[in-house]
Image 1: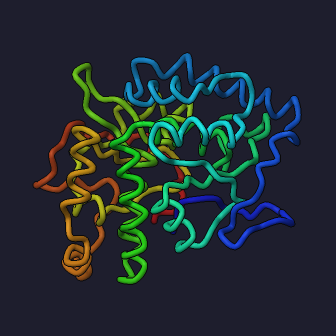
Image 2: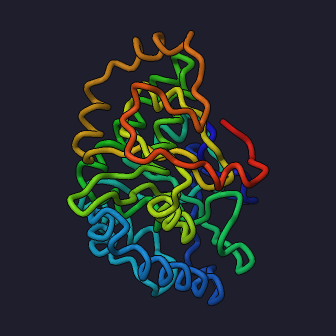
Length: 292
């Protein structure tokens, strides 16, 4: 898959399922300080921007700016809420391993944290992205069910040669999804929630398209891997996202999409439910990175 970590950490003790000890006691004061700095910045920014379910999970799991969370303690609280655990991995894991962990309610997380010169951008997800960005919503029962369903869907997609299609679903929901609320659009994707700049860009900037969620359309849509997104897909609710995932027979959908060309990122289709027609000014002003 195109999601996950870009580099493999050098570790001696890697289990068959690619898990490693977190070795929490080895974190330095500077590393805990970086977590606190990132946490404080996002904690001040996100209220009024992020889905309330995220903030509820953050509170339930007792994440704070008291340093990098201990995965054992975090998993104990998460298990009581939804049956999920957080396990450390050294970096990119094979697709079958990734899907198996999700299907069995284990969320894989890198254990390293960015350095001060990477505070606003790093090429691979670190522990702040993985844990602060992803884990709070795993305390929400419906989203927790969605993530398990995604893992099981991934196992099937691997057998059908459709992992790329399914990776787009992960990208545009789990990583970069928006959700409707009575007060307006809110962010929930971990790639946005863990990013100071994109937490603002995703909701406020006139550049990106914001489109209503459509499963088949989304799975045809390319995306950027190293910059702010040009498209955000908006779900109506987590219940609706889960229902559409569980009610869809993905096998025939993959077959239906196979001969149809991919959709370019900035393209708007006549059938789209357009919430915001973006100017694409941000993207056009830059030399853009790789498209997937």
